[in-house]
Length: 528
Image (cartoon, rainbow, N blue to C red; front, side, top):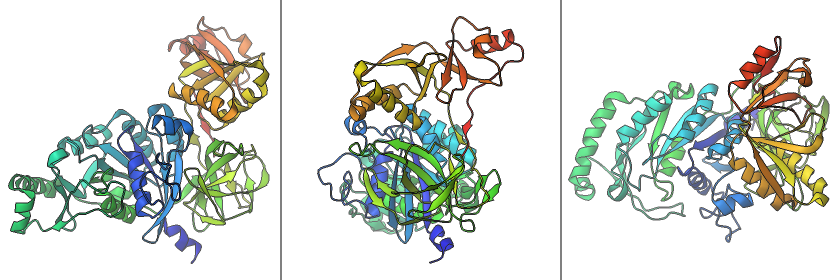
């Protein structure tokens, strides 16, 4: 099979949602259909581990939430599918934003009883910014839900994208009878069973058959007739608009009871794009025509605590990867051999001998990679477009409790910082004596403390600081020479760049007024 044929088989997508909309459950059902797991909730061969397959960190298992993006791969109907499962909680949105840069399209999961929620809006905007196709799965129809027209209206008005329902629900909650498939013109009946199995008992009924009215009930059938008249008048599928990210195909179902998931998966994989062109500073990079290239979008330390390892997750953008190949590490300015490459199923790893554009691989990182780094085989070195980074909004002073564990403490803090979840700053002259940690969401502080204790055996204390605004000093201005405000603190980041922290929103403007010629920047990008 040619490289182009292999790439055409790839589908790489991210799943986004507000917390508790059912994203992780839907991910597991996809894996179930792909044969990657035997029973929803457990990886093959690990029958005792009933936490979510994609949640591998101890804190995720304890709290029942996803705090880090995970990468999962399975095969279905001749396609190789890469799923990027993202944290739903807003405090981990930075990880999600970066992960969306590695996806070719997105699946948006919406709770049928709540509609579009705050975090969905944020993540959706990132997808729109990248013009990637968005597919919507409205979940939890087995519970009481909003009117389906109201849900569509919600998506269109709040998110500003046109919708087209591929199927349509008959009732919800106790009155949920099933789903009408618009393309096949049939009703698939709902039975609340088989939550963990692939095969579930459903029946396909012809709406025109009088026996169907008897089984479903007159009121439900009358409502369906009225709904379809309205839908046929307004909702038309336009696959070109889907590809441009202007129209979202909508599916209804219940991930927990496994209803509507396979229908969604089949339609979605048919319409989802194969890996496309990625922009670089030397122009577009064709996935099939160019030799191997990739960018790092995530770094994770201690996926295997016993080995104290670091994995750099890479999205392959073009060509074919072969185990042990030597490539240009563009930002590092040197050649590097990619060793111990793996594909992931949560913590379960499979060694990879080859992979193609669209695939996500993890390679052993000896401490040389940063988020946004480009790797390529081409002699003409190029960099992929930058990965967005976000200014921290919460700050705290961090101290270890046992001074004898200073080395472990510094190692833990710096390794976790390299993953991009936290940012660390230090006094201009004090070195690492005093560490200030900045995060986008306060829950990241909990994760930091948990991981220092769990992975590095270090107990630490946090002292919250009043700062909320951060500005980098652009140009040669010495931080000490700046005439500041009473709520301002001068610090520097890990790369030695000077910056200012402020407690009040008006302070940066006041500092600029007091210091003619001074330039301050919010936060830029890690250039891939």
